[in-house]
Length: 294
Image (cartoon, rainbow, N blue to C red; front, top):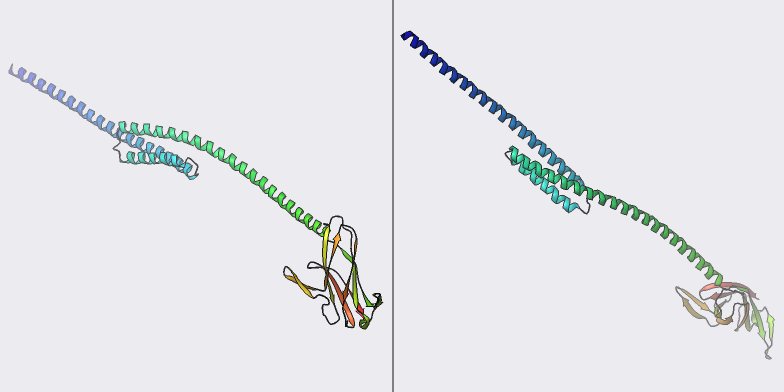
């Protein structure tokens, strides 16, 4: 009887030990499962954190590229880029649990949406700037063509003005000089001897010119003897940087028709040799000739 009781007690003890063993195994299994779950969660959190950081870095790169284009939206783009940089710094220092990662992911999505909207505006601005640049290039071409055309017109006008000015100049022809001896009666006798000469008569013709300006025309006549002396008045006048010593002047009324001019230069003690006669229109020599007294 006693042996039977001992046997029953032994069974009870074994049963209790078995229950404890099973409980321990269940507890150990649960701890192991929890540890594996925690490890898996840590891996997932790290992966998600890295993914969000990469997305934020890509977002920052997009902003950097847009800012480099230096559009009128640069200030707004810089402000949004700085928000991305700040969020990246916060995420790097965060402990990193699922709740906080969801918060950062949500903030990233908001920033991404803002970026997409800004990029659309940037593209619109780029298109407008391209159109404006094209229009400016076209305008520049038109202005360059106009400038060249105006330069051609200016050149043509200058040539025309020169042609008109040249055409308006009067032509002096038939310049001749004759020597005379004066009689007491006033009669003039032609001579070619210096000793008999009392007066030189200079004559020339102003040719007809329909486009020249009409009115009084003054010419300066210079007579130089064989000793290179200027005869007559010997007056000197300046035209700009040019000075002229002349023998006499003659003024005629010109009305675009041919005019014959005749003037006399009195003198005495004329020398033998070759004389030179020059006719000037202001400072410009318009005719010249020579004659000889023996």
